[in-house]
Amino acid sequence: RLQLHASSPRHTFTRPMAPALAALLEATEGRSAELDAESEGLAAEVAALDLEIAGKRAEKTIAAQNEVRELLKSKEALAKKAKLIGAAAGHVRLALAKLQRAKQAGLEDWKELREETVKLSDFARERLKEGATVAQLEASCAGGSVKVDGASLAFAGSSAGLEGLRRALEQLESAYSCTIEVDALTLGILERRKALERQGEKHGVTVAKDAGGASVTVSGAAEKARKAEQMLKFMMSGKVDLPCPKELAGAAKAHAQDVEVETGSYVEVLRGGFGGGSIVHIRGDSEGVKDAEERMRAWFDERDGAYSSFVEAPSLAKLDAAKTAELTNDLWHFGQKFAIAASLCEGGARVELRGPAGGTWEAPARAELRQLSDWYGQQAEEVGSAGAKAKAKAQPTKKEEDDCWGAAPEAQFELGHKW
Image (cartoon, rainbow, N blue to C red):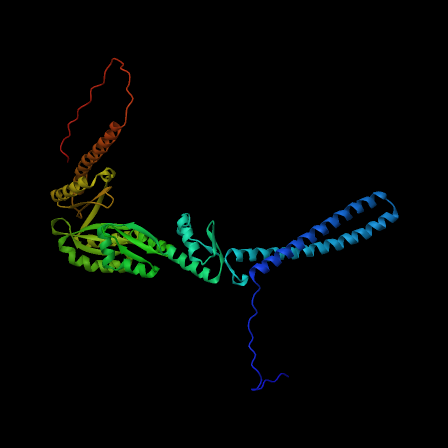
């Protein structure tokens, strides 16, 4: 038994120093060459035995057949030895390749070599198509090497270089940003409900309103920012605005709170309707908004004893902003004529007529509205036709031959009243 006494000298054990990489690389290259030469020698011996075996078999004597059996035993022993030498040579080649990679990485000790394959996001892969970005990554990995291979990044270098590369990739990923267009009213609702702030905290990104107030920017790590972008677009996929009579505004605000809880949509009643009325603004995902719209309409029908009738008018969706504003004003006057409410629905392709239940207003109102929508539709077509003609005039036209008949006279039409 080994006994240690206080008076015994203290021994310090240190880790043996690794051989210099250059010397180890040289020795490994030498051993690889030796094994390759030995493998070639064994292959030559096996080839010579094959020739000798073929010759003895050609003799077709008993003595020759006995010699063939002995030669086959020798060949089998050589084959086993060649297999072992080949396996050893393969291991040495792998070790040699690793030492060479350590040398390329500028390491003094091959044990410090770290090799890792990092999966790249779509955003990082696009950025790495730029030579400057790859150069920045190489500069961050302390002499290590990086190579882009499809959707992955191969690294070889030291532990410190690997950590530097990871930090550089995190910084690269955090530079992702995307912009989502949104109308000012919807953006205001989302801000008041702190929806943007909550989505940013939930996904670990920054969601901020742009200076113009017509869009929001999501910035942060690419994968997290894309998830936040998808969620925000989903939250803004539905949009409906309903007219609210002035006398029902207060009660509508209270009912809107219940509808929000039941549907998960944002429902706000704000001033802005014609005649001092209000508008019910519903925002959220398309399914939730549809549900909230149906609930609010049913509530309005019950409270004011009215119902809505919708008139499809696809041509109105082609109107520009100025004509749409003019149509909105005309619809208000149109509604006054029939003692109903008339408004253009979201998307501009249909008109809502809302009046008292059991009344006789619907048939004449729909008939006259058709004349109004036809007139505005014709206006939209004329504007589009004028734009097409202007574009065609700007292009050079091929001169046609005169057929001596001349051009046909253009027909003249006189438009009547727009209603």
